[in-house]
Image (cartoon, rainbow, N blue to C red):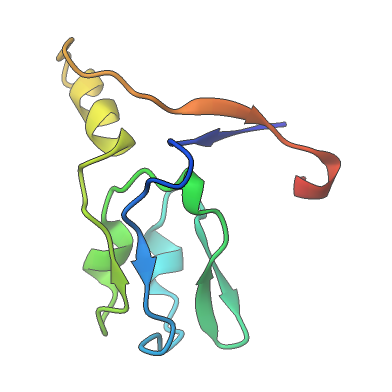
Length: 101
C-alpha cells in the first residue's frame, strides 16, 4: 500500500512533548494520522504525511503543537477544490514496505 507524503523533512509541524497532557484532541482532528498516543502523551509518528492543515495546533488546549497552517499541501488541495488553477500539490505516493503496513 502507498502513503501520501508532502516534501520530505520540510513540514513546519513541531511538538513540545514536555507540554503535552495526553488529552488526545490532536489525534481526533488530524486527517492524516500523523500523531499517535504513546505512554500517556502524543508523539509525531509520520511527520512527512502532515499536510499542515493546522487542526492539531488549533485544538491543543496547552499549545504543545505548532504548525504554520496553510503553507503546505493543504493550501494546494483547498485551492484545487475551489477551482483555482495556479496552485498545485506536491504530495507524492511512496510505496510502503512490509514493516510500514
